[in-house]
Length: 205
Image (cartoon, rainbow, N blue to C red):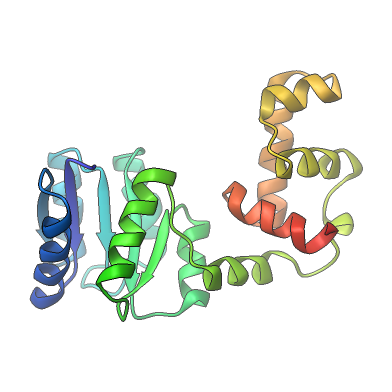
C-alpha cells in the first residue's frame, strides 16, 4: 500500500472522514492533509507522496492545469480526483493525466474500491466515466481520424501488444511504434489503454 497519502479538501469533515475509512482498512499508511491548493504544492515540494486524493474545487485551484503541475513536481504520483462534479468534468482531468475519478457522494465501499484499484492497476475509472471518455473521443469514424498505418497500430495496441511486439509485427523500429502510439493518443484525445480498448470494442466488435 502507499506509504503516504495526501488528502486535499477544504472541508474538515471530508478530510477526516476519508482518513478514518483508509486507516481502518490499511494500518501502515501515513496520511497528511491540505485544505487549499497552495498547501498541496507545499506538501508536494517537501515530501514524496504516492497518492493524492484531490478536491478540484478547493481554494487556489487552477482547474485541470493542476494535474500537469502536480505531475511536473512528482511524476510518479497517482492523482484521484474527488469531486461533486460529474463525469463530463472529470474526463477533462483524466485527459490531463489524472489517474482516477470518484464522486463525493460515493460510499465507503466505493472509496476503498477506488484506492485499491489505483494501487493495483494504476487507475480507477467507473463505467460511466469510461463511456464519457469514449463519447468525447469519437466524433467521427475512427478510420477518418487515423491513417492506415495508425489504424494498424491502434488495433495491435487494443489486442494487447506493446511497442516491441508491434515493431516486430510491422517490421519497424520500437521507437517508431512508440511514435505511432503517441500520435494515436493525441488524435483520439486519450491517455490510457483502457479507453483505447473501449474505443476498439465500440468501433470493431
